[in-house]
Length: 482
Image (cartoon, rainbow, N blue to C red; front, side, top):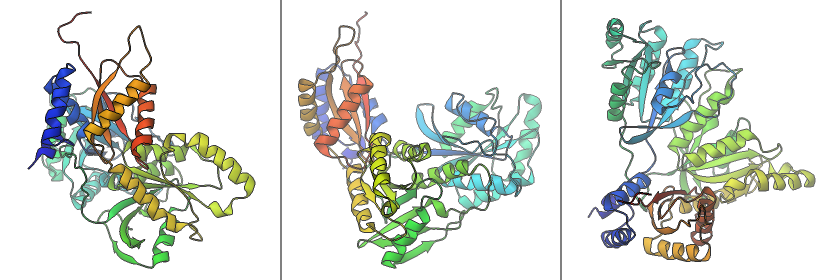
């Protein structure tokens, strides 16, 4: 019985009823299937682009994502807002993790390259290893190859800077790295990148099919994230010490410390401590960049992100960036305000105003006020995490959703624009973890009205602690010319 596989969230009877409704409203079956398929898949597979500096990694990232967004001339100390981008090739979507542009640091090139490759590989399902074909394989390249072998991820070898037939022999020499066929490309001019992307798609898993109401085996995975020095390690130590049950500390192959299996509230959880990822490179500069990579790696592995915020300081742009990273990754979310017990009345007053204004976009996330140092209110962490996970996995039956949408549209119709009033005709929930909805409409639905729908969905069905994705499919006027 695989109706869930075929129809995403919908069983056979519900699917048949839904398709009949769609046909009545002028949508064809192909359109519906495409919309459900796009919205119903789980998290996108991730591709890491690694290699030593100046081999053209960020140029290749820009080529893959189809726009000039990744930093192509980076310097140590330059804060980078993003390290992941979304891309599409041959109808398949995936994420790209960029490690480009880092210069040699005080401890030497090998250490710098290895550190960033380590974090990126951890967040990835497959890796593109970029080598400068005009230079050939260097000692640093060999070091990255050893890292890749240990990680055990699929690898595609890109021989960059091959601008013509004369460079093909340079590319062929890279067979010596033992990673299989080198793909000769010019990231700058686009030569050979189509063939490279075809190979990348073979290495990447298909976007995972959506599962409803099922969880991956083993303990639920929690990423403890936040900007440097907000108390992540203290919180983890407090959690572990409080219950004095570290069930197991698993030593990873490509990083030292450890995902902690900890018993809390009678349940074993896996805490992914971003603070604990090995800092082999004692960077004076560029720490934000490495923190972003570490955070991205931890969030990719987690189901829930617990974002720790230092209440003794104003909520910063960096705090908001980290929250955005977790939301965009589609993870359940809990906000933990640390050092709450140290606040005087005045600071507490201003902090509440900051939370109202700066954290409005995640007002749906459970909030706990804790002290990692003293353990105050730590018992509230588990209920908050459980609430967020429950919201993340919530599924609304199609019939109930459409009854809700009918009432919503009748009571609060979309504003008239250009003499027309677009209507939400019907919808379905195509996925969970996080909840993903597809709405079918008679015309373009404005962003403000989509936000209104999200707000009302939360009021009606809960969805505490989870982002919600809403996509709208507009009915094509078939056979009519305007």
